[in-house]
Image 1 (spheres, one colour):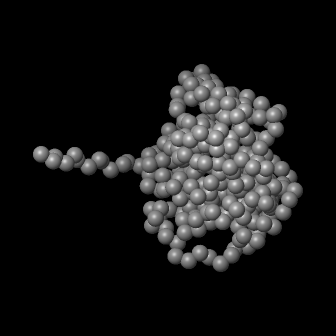
Image 2 (cartoon, one colour; image 1 turned 30 degrees about the vertical axis):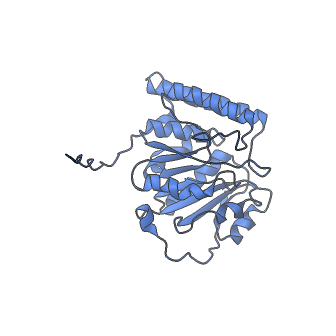
Amino acid sequence: MHRLVVRLRHPVADYHRAVLNGKQVIVVLPAYNAESTLKLTVDELDRAIVDDLVLVDDGSTDATIEAAEALGVKAIVHFTNRGYGANQKTCYRAALDLGAEIVVMVHPDYQYSPLLVPAMAAMIAYGEYDLVLGSRILAQNAVARGMPKYKYVANRALTVVENLLMHEKLSEYHTGLRAYSRDLLAALPLDRNSDDFVFDNQVIAQAFAAGARIGELSCPTRYHAQASSIGPARSIRYGVGVLRTAAQYRLQKNGLRSFPYLAVSSLKQDARPPAPAAIDAS
């Protein structure tokens, strides 16, 4: 059961929708105890680009909902903590119901930079990508930027194995900053995925199975006391789930096994215009 709390602040005038090819952009905020960081996150979202915000509160014990209401953010409440994956399922369902053409997930704990939302949305708006991942690894030293060494080592080890099993070459699979096209989200059977943290990796596996075009953007991150994190036991469970997902993807790809959450129809890609003819300068 959940309830919808809506208190809209004054609308932002003169949305420049043409900047993103006329696409409606909705940012979703999967929240758990984000009272102290929500305003920092929302304040850095460019409302000339972002048409709407939807926060899903997953049974927080602080005043996250009150903070969302004060900021005029649409809020959906899970009365009990249902898990990070379940939170995202509600986020994406709500965004699609509101007519989103591009959906960007931003963690409201202010770990990932909200300033990158326009760039990520643009990569989808003009038809280049179906999914864009904000990478903490690409073109930067994540440890120097504050990522704990044990997290960096685990991230790199899991990513290497995932790339090998899935025959792909992402810089990381574990980011919480993501942008999706409507067509991709609508095509994925998200309800078949886990309600826990491995949901993120299952979505990437589903996107690969659908033939989605996946891009990455270098993303600085902040590590602070209010940033969400999981303990050692859940980290181990997550790691095992990640490896299981990659192995299941390979087994299904090779026709050896089938898994319901990976039964995804191929995306119909729009035909791209031909490249212009080369100019003869002679």
